[in-house]
Length: 377
Image 1 (cartoon, rainbow, N blue to C red):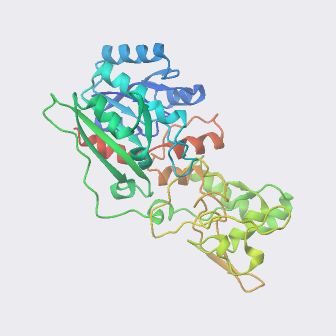
Image 2: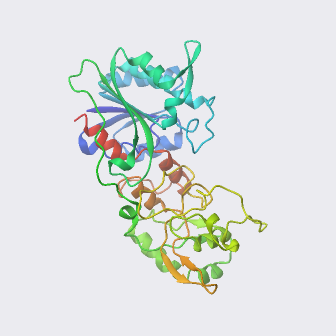
């Protein structure tokens, strides 16, 4: 079967589709850098880089999809205007990108369609026929005549992915098809973050705002641990952090926020030494015994939501407090494991760590997509 990927990013979602006989042969992405990385990862797919709101791009994609006899269209529009990790601006123009996906769907009339976004999409209104209408109602108004609808809010942790990630998923089947595409059944066993990364040895961060010799006094095994990490994967790179954030995370237990540390000296502070005010899901270590929290675009910062490695008890310091290993965010390699990406996924070497972290944080776990698309087969 042949598929078209709209809002393709660098192809996180489609990482396993080739394994089950679904070939993404056509893709669209507005960002040139992402499009180039996509072409590196999927050299056999034709990438059309351009703005999907441009009539010329819509026309090109539609004609090419018809020419290629596309069976499936998958569309994962940007969610920043609706996501709880974003500003939730109901007037964000990105909320309206669904219009253009629907236009291509109506032009091509593929056998199957998948639309995916954050759950808030179900409660987001867009302008249609001179009134504000909920996105699900808009989709039904435009596509109900041609397609059978199945939709649900799913948590990818219920489908073998070691990450809590709630998504609104629509799967559409053209009404002349004999087989209706349905969502897969939830699985009994929920994979934890320990299942995903618990086998990896400790890894220290690089403290970049102090002298390197001082850094080695804090982490005397840094070089040894770094070499071991890079022997596992070129993307298992020690994250870089500032000292005052690393210091408080050293004293923060697994599953806890540094805001809860009993000693005020071990709570988050700004550069002036004043205590930071913030939410208790920031400066927070994840837990070993549950799936990872939702990976966001901001996964490189300790001060963002639920980003810090769970850690393990190390030693008792001179003040009688327990110190914990891995006072850092997850590495790119660990993010890949939590996102269910293949460990040999061919990310080009010439892209920055910041770029890869951001695009992974926007993706949908490909193992869920594989299981969802297997329902067609």
